[in-house]
Length: 251
Image (cartoon, rainbow, N blue to C red; front, side, top):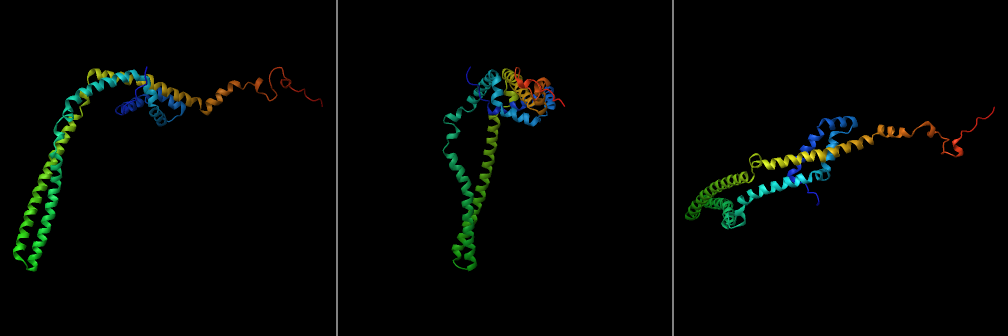
């Protein structure tokens, strides 16, 4: 067999859900209470060992990933085909129109403010009345142009946003509608194998090691070698003088 497949980012949530299900099982809960290991710590260990536990269900995951890629590839070909050819994305005027839609209201507003200030300033100074009237008229015209350009820009922006939201909704298929029965069965088979062959044995091993390293377990394992016949201070092995107890002294 080749190298185990790396779990995709879109499958991390499924792995976390499967891990939570195994931790919530009566067997694991009973062992958690017996060993005293916090459930959050066990969950962190399970998440960190995703590469090890997921490898136990690698065959099921490969089949599930292949079916999902085939299904997504069929939809992607029909939906994104125009993006690789001379489609809507290659309209050179789209960017220029967008820039003009933003700059036109700003420039027209600045021009209107400038002409109106100059025109009314000349009127207040009572100098060059013909030029003052011209500047005021141009200023009000520029203000109308700025208002119309701003209105057109807002409408265009709203239509673009609505079109983009519709495209995003079409690009993301409904899982319940898009998932075929074969894909659903492959996903369920992967999750079952992941729980039974990957996550549960790993958690049981972690709990067994935690129970073995507990202080009570260490004392219990050492009690097998604490026989009085071999634990005395004078014992140094069979056939040696240290194995004989010294005779009591005569008073």
